[in-house]
Image 1 (cartoon, rainbow, N blue to C red):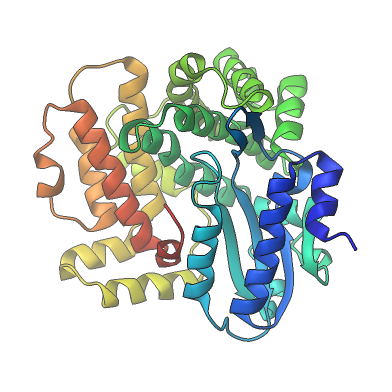
Image 2: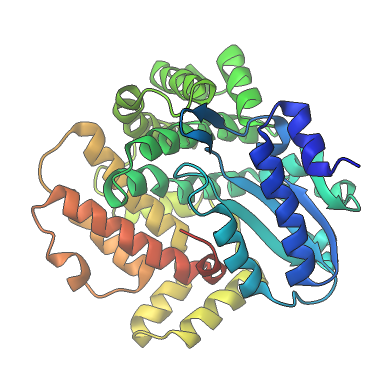
Length: 384
């Protein structure tokens, strides 16, 4: 009898190596997590957009695999499951290949956040194991949550270029970030279009909203779509266009014109207005983080009151602006101030990089990673 993983890979022509890994994921979940009710894969894997290629050295898996595991009761051995996933994927694919599987109680399905990702998964997800929960996924989404996800993803090309020095990873991360623009365009119109390729084609055909009127953004989406067809894409083209295109998209998104070059309070407040309200659960989680890992009462209180994604987004857009202009030396001081506040780190963390652009941006990546773990401690279980 063919497994669900084999059915998925046959449907989209994915390699057998992926189906073998997904079959192993099902076995690992059952052995480590207890009573698994269902495992669901999200787009883009479920829509035929998973990237891979064959070379003389074998099959290289290039995309991440996103999804959800719903269990009855508390997971039995969560850390063991995470370690087993790391072992399963280590050395198998390219720099972007990993398994990003969120593990939740089955009781939470009817309370899933109203985000684009959950609506898209409900419409076009793939049930890898168990009973389908997809009809219980939300059918409405808040476009502010899409903007929030966009801000959090700004880190990815910087991470590959300056922290990992991964050229192939940079091209792939740049293309992936650019393809957030069609997602934003669809989200702003209240439409959910499943899959990166489907959204890119829709965007290029329809040129929707204010984002679709920009020749620079159109050129970037075309380059990103070409990279999805022949991964990892043209590094020179993607490297030159990702920073100015993303900066323009951010400036156009809310119709308020160009962002300030120095990511100060004005930019943070503007981005904070993009974000959805924090839930009681989110505020409780932030308070728990501050109590478990206190730094200084004033810094902790400021961190609790601030919209953290707005702080980090303002800082990274400042880096993007610096790179888009081709300026020499380190970017504006506001970047360091915003990120240090985001991660609750002392100012000395970035002082030693003054005048060293690559060293400064490398430190920005490190501080951002630390701040992201402060904000989402569960990410510590995954490879970042």
